Every structure is written in structure tokens, then in C-alpha cells.
Image 1 (cartoon, rainbow, N blue to C red):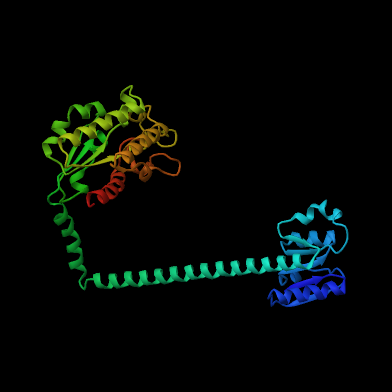
Image 2 (image 1 turned 120 degrees about the vertical axis):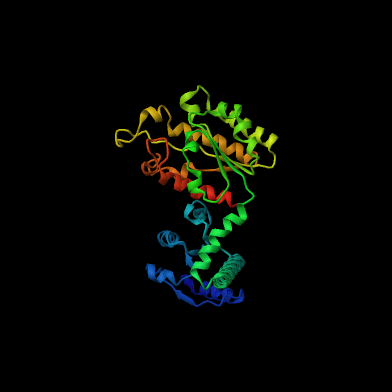
Length: 352
């Protein structure tokens, strides 16, 4: 709707004539006195053409309406000094041609908005159609994959890992967290080798790569090392990372076909005031803030060198950013529940 609130009869007729000339086909309402429009009235009005009335214009601007102010034949000096006429959606005119230009621009804006709405609606409908076709396709695939016998399906699932992994030779390299990991239990019928040794730091791994890695000619190597460097050495975070780099480089040099996976350091739980089973003789001076800093360095190194980084830290922490108490025996080492979580994550990479 176009609302005209102009007292001059001749100007009202001119406005209506120009509205029709520029091709606006909206309903036209005219009044001579400044009306008291409610919020409900304003909802149905798209553009308002009015005489200069400061309070009325301010009210319209508050509701973000398109306003055209007729300044008549009076001096324009008064209006140039009035900042309310410089609002984004407020236009002024003296002459017919000015009003014609304003209304022509209004039509263009309206057409652009209409086009954008149609375009967005078209994108939405296409997206819904694609999603619908994808869902239908997924349902068809599930129907095709469905087996008539439950037992047969279970047997096939058990056979698949053996068929896929029988030529693998998977080495787990690390310290006590690896050494205490019952690999044969967690990875039945998968060729895995436990090369973890309690108390090992990164320097120990570097000195023993021949006996712990090379002799097995591995297809995959999972590296978890560095937590003992924090409590048993004076190595800085950068020195720990440098040793991990050397370990990776040496394996790549002597066993270039081995796929290397670098695990994040695991979190610890040093809240011995709350949990009796926390053993500070084992946890020592490790803290999760430093562990996260080292993990960030390892992650950035893996990203730069296109190595597989396994973020195990986030899998094992609780809401307080500590090692989940259910996953640990003493604040550092893992329970079977903890190794279950680790196994689930590692299995994704073994089957890759």
C-alpha cells in the first residue's frame, strides 16, 4: 500500500498521476491531515509520501518505513539543517521529476528483493530435492545390503578384518601406556606387535628402533611417546617434538613403506584430593596444560608433513579437562575401559 499524507490537493493529484506513470500498481490511500497510524496500520504500508512533519517522520523512521517527504515551494534552508531528513530510507523532493526518480528507484529495489527471494526459494527447493533423493538412495542401499540370516551376517563381519588385514604387520611403539596395552585381547586375529617398554622416553626409542621396529618390517607403526620426558628428563617441549621427528624420520628412512601414525599424549588426572586411587608418585609433575602444548606442536608437525595425527587426548578427558577417572588406574595409566576407548579409535586407522 502507498499512503499519501499531503495537504495540497493539486500535489496529491500529481503524486497519484506519477505513481501510475511509473507503473506502481499498489493500493493508494490519501489523507489531508497528519494521521495517527498504529503499528498494525504501518504493517500494511510499503511507502509513505507526506508533508514535512518532524514528529510524524521520526515515528515512521522508528518502524523502518520507506518515506518520501514533500518539501513544497518553501525555502530549503530549514530542511538542509534537519538531520532527520538524512535517514537511509527517507527521501525528499521539491519537483515532480525528483518524485518520479524516487519512485522508479523504489520499484527497482522491490524487484531486486523479489528476485532474491525467488532465487533463495529455488536453492532451498533444489537442496530439499537433493536431500530427498540422497535419503531414498541410502534406503535402497540398506535394503540391498540386508541379509536374510542374522548369523550369516555376523560371520561375514568377523571374516572381513582377517581378509583385509592378514598381510598387515602392525607395531605399537611407546612406553608403559603401550606396554600395558593387551593388544591380543583388543585386536583378536589381527597381526599386532607390542613394542612398548615401561619408563621409556623419546631418547630410548631412538636408540632401539632396530630391535623395536625394523626387525618386524611393519606395514603400520603407531607411535605414543613423550609423557615420560615431562617427568623424567629436562627436555623442553620443542626438544620432545624434535625427538619425535627423528623417530619418524628414521622409520621413514629404513622402512619407507610403513604407514606412520603419531598419537597425541594422553591426559593425566592429578586430583588426588578427590580420588583415592590417584597415585602422585606415578603422575609426578605432569600437567595437562603442558601436555596440550606438546600435542599442539605434534599436530602442527603432522599437518605440515602429511602424517596421520591421532587426537586421543580429547577421547579420554572428562568435562573438567582431566583424564576420565573411569579410564585410569592411578591418574596416568589406563584401565580396560580406557583401552576400550583407545581401541575403538585406533581400529578406525587399522582398517583404513
